[in-house]
Image 1 (cartoon, rainbow, N blue to C red):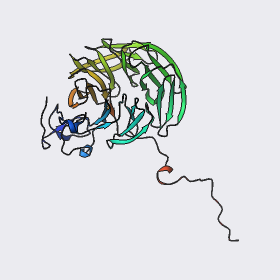
Image 2: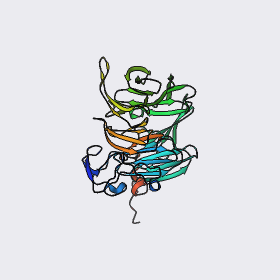
Image 3: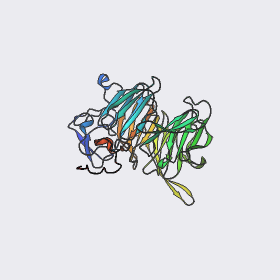
Image 4: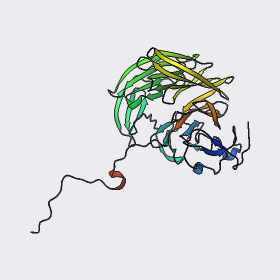
Amino acid sequence: MSASVSPRSVVTSRVYHRRPVRVSAGSDIRYSDPVTRGWGLVLVAVLTAGPAAFAGDEPVGVLAWSAGGQVGLVDPLGRWAETFETGPVGWLYPAPGGVLFAPDLVDGRTSVLDLRKVAVADRFDGVMVPWFGDLEQRYYVCLPGELLIVSYPDRATIARIETDVRSPWRFVVAVDDSSALILDRAPDGSGETAMVAVDLVSRRQVYRRPLRSGVRHIALSSTLGLLAVADVDASSVALLEPATLSVVSAVPVSGVPRDVGFADDGTTLIAAVGDDLRAEVCAWQLKGEADGLRTRRQRCAPLTGAPLRLAVSPDGEGVAVATADGWTSVLGVRRLEVEARLETPRDVRDLVWGDPSRPGPPVPEWSDDRPPELSIGRLPPPSNR
């Protein structure tokens, strides 16, 4: 549905801000000018255009998508959006310090986007695919046959861990960077789909175990110690025990499970399910009890098209789902109500919800203001003789 919006027409928004702010009225708004729009996201008019339009507290995080030869950054409430030419980018890699890495595997270059300034911070030849955990000063590079631990931001290799990974697809890190799980799957789905677990403390592979070929996406809740698996050939979302991959629970869904995530503090399961005929995003509250896992309070909201990717906000209070009809729906997790609907490409490859407020790696004190000093004791005072 289209609507015209006057910059003077405003309503009050309730979520994704520490306090209410005023944004432009209207929903389902498309920016129809093909010249200025480019293949951009959205543009819902605001009081003043651009990222500097924030008045008061900023929203929690920035949405980013990749599609075609572009990467887009957008405010979760649709108040501004920017699109950048990056070349064909698949996965997006959020990093500490409000940075997003967008590697172009075809042309062999990487674009670095600044989520705070909403601008290109750097472009360089070569491909950088950093998976970050909780630690700001290191990241992980998953390659066929090995997992690299690399220092950040200087990109020096700390360690190499031999693995049985053949085609790394998705990668999740447990809390405090103690272990990692790697979904090993060829892009075309050929060959074996498997999960590989790596102990990052002892720096060795723990296991490689086969999975169903329909598994596309995974999400880890360190709070509950559960791994959620989206299998497009199943009619439920499987919750697995990460150490053994044994099934703890299977949560039934009413369509094809396309993507999964954990919201709140890791105790709310989110799943995007369905196809072009019927699609929805659903949420379940999970609670670990003495007699097992309890699933409560299923709630669902319809989507406008088949879901492509799902992203959870940094504070766990919001979820965004990109769909194949050219929309991304932004919802509050508590009530699962649509708070904004943003225009995105129909072929979104990845969708992430970055956190510009996450601090960057610690910087040595001497490198900020003054050169290093050598202190090995005091010299004796000069003699008068």
